[in-house]
Image: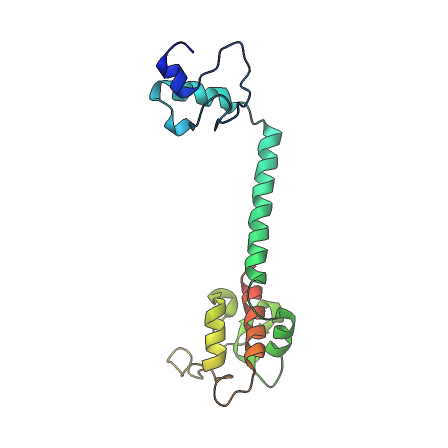
Length: 173
């Protein structure tokens, strides 16, 4: 290396290819990223590495990133306690009246006495809270919502978690 500046940036000789050297962050650039390169070298570094990723590789990277996002969303839905399949059975059960008050596309219910769950997209904890404690009537929702948990519970904690898992997974796809 001829100068201190070239040594600091880990510049390679022009005859060599930009092979990755051990202990380097970018091939030939010792522990430096493009953002940390001196202003005079940024354009040269970007130009050198701009053609490394071709269109097929870029498309593959985008596909992998999209698949990772979809998998993360699926894991987020699967990470809530409860069984959504059993929850759907409870939700549509005639004794609980969920479908008569709530609109939810997954059950083809069109109730109007409670919030449209497709639009509200409540979080898991909010669903558990509402099903357990209910809600007093309001001007917008004059029927309120009965409590299905607590002291005089109609549902067990596991059943409430199942309903919450179903509603959450149905509204967060």
